[in-house]
Length: 432
Ligand code: HAM
Image 1: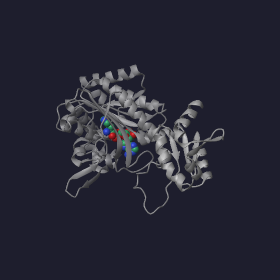
Image 2 (image 1 turned 180 degrees about the vertical axis):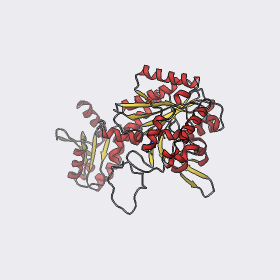
Image 3 (image 1 turned 135 degrees about the vertical axis):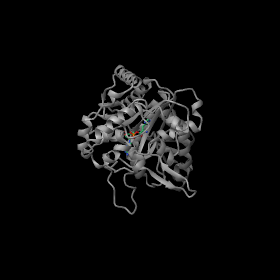
Image 4 (image 1 turned 90 degrees about the vertical axis):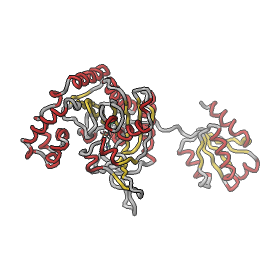
């Protein structure tokens, strides 16, 4: 994406946002196909929320003191005075929709997935964009740790089908409202006496969001985080056993993971399990391919019943960047079966109708109605590796015939126009 060469034109795409060009669509098609297929196989139903949501939805769920809400939201006020925000993530929208459309009355767990853009006003750099795309999965309504593991399994199935190996799960458990407050207190007291050694951002975050100090990338903060108390020593029995179970399921599935006590995630709603998936050879958090975790308190805090949930989102731009970087080959689309060549006014007119007849008969057909010479059109047929060229000129229209040119052998034959569909189908069958 960032490597895309751009010309200085009068207008340019906004910083951190770019076009997905025709040459790259092959990757996006593939990823979307694999996501839809696996989502279906794992029992997820698709939900597409609107791109704009009430701003308060994110303030109250993503969290008022998170980077996303403090610095990165694209917010606007409509002419009618509503405060709306371009979604910076899917999870709050999905829970809003689950509550608003009464999906909570469905048998649980309710499994929902979405694909689409998210918007974060971040500092653009490699793998970090202001408009990026996610495939997002949520399993709502059950506490069982097997669901946490199954989502990680789903990610690994997706990546395998996309030709990506050598990925690793970074996993942690950040406790629940029962055990986290005691840990938070210990953490604040640890950092308070070392406040001068923190970066200015962390000095500010110490009161509001002290857990985030653990995953700050500034050198001085990384060193302090290594000595900081670890949440694992403060987990209540329930969180402990949940964590142990998730890890046992991952062992059973032979999914590679690393316990990362500094992984806290930048969103407020998480409880218990949090995870990210990184390339094994990568530079760390900057290029997390996916991130997620359990959020047992969010549904209730948005006005629903006490309902557990767990989910993750995969960053599609980063997945595609890695596919390109690792030279993952994607089978290109099948070549067109038929290229329709038209010559002269009559040929052009008649070809419009014939194109439709061929297409409706299930023959993958391409034509170029704006090119007028036989040479240019046959060159295109050749380039697209069409199996047959059908040539319709002035004479053929008057005679009610058409020329069938076999693009492999170069031989050609005149046949009645009204038999063309049947004849091409017959020849295709024979040449298989
Ligand atoms: P997140 O970690 O903020 O989690 O985003 C998930 C993934 O989206 C990241 O690992 C990354 O691959 C991609 N991503 C995020 N921001 C950018 C960006 N600026 N540029 C490129 N890629 C990006 C969430 O969004 C949670 N809602 C996930 C979740 C679902 N948790 C529970 N359910």
